Length: 340
Figure 1 (spheres, rainbow, N blue to C red):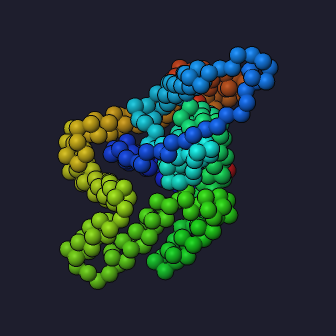
Figure 2 (figure 1 turned 60 degrees about the vertical axis):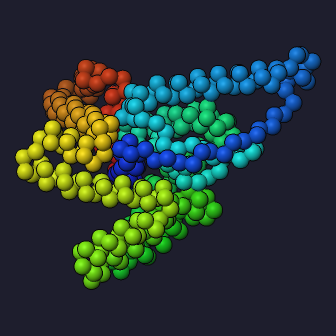
Figure 3 (figure 1 turned 90 degrees about the vertical axis):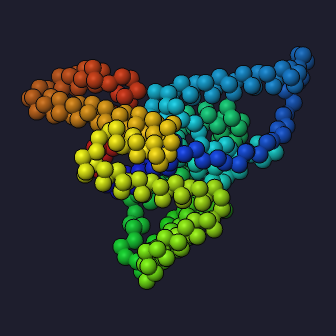
């Protein structure tokens, strides 16, 4: 189960971003300088600045369209990258919480499409929106972040009681500093670090001897003292926790899909309720297809056929039940399930 810890946090972030759009500061603009072109060195007529801008703009647009077409075949269809990359005047990436939000967005596809394809999509998107230099630096950051996520999910960083929560956070911080470097880790996880402090304060309030009414007032005050975008995020998380309890109570009382839609509509509005309904149906449909596939796969594996014949039948089964994108997704899921 540890393998799913890092991925599940990423998926939750993606879901929160889908439900309520988080507005981020506009990215810094950059003034890029270009070296002397081959055209000038070779005596050919150089490409004018306006021509270069048009060419680069067309390339960026084509790159964005290509990425969007691929994302349209995944669970991220009809969503947008939740932030913009910040770059300096030389086109270098400024590592910050925006960088993390973008990486988390693309990494929410883990288990759905191959990791190398996710990395390629990320680089293609970044190149089209922030330039080649920032794209290279973002993919390098992606590799380090993936290393961190694997180390975190395979390590013992869970607090077992109230007394070692702070010790657990310190050990996690050392892991971040070791893999990403102290400066990058501080910038990259800035919002998450603030949330950790918020969580500790929230824990202290809940563990106090205050009355329920006093605790609720203290928690509301705590959320309001956070930076605006974080206060909004914490409020959303509070709504999600409340929503999960309300959904469970509704289901236990015999509520159906219509009742759940009404609940979501009341909490988040029409657009978000429709999106949540669509996601729920997609997940349920996918689960049914996977269950059907696994049952038929088990029959094939127990049929006594040769390995070659079994492989042929499994390939035929996958092509019958799944489209091309879904076949990549089920293959990735099988790799995760079969790995030690």
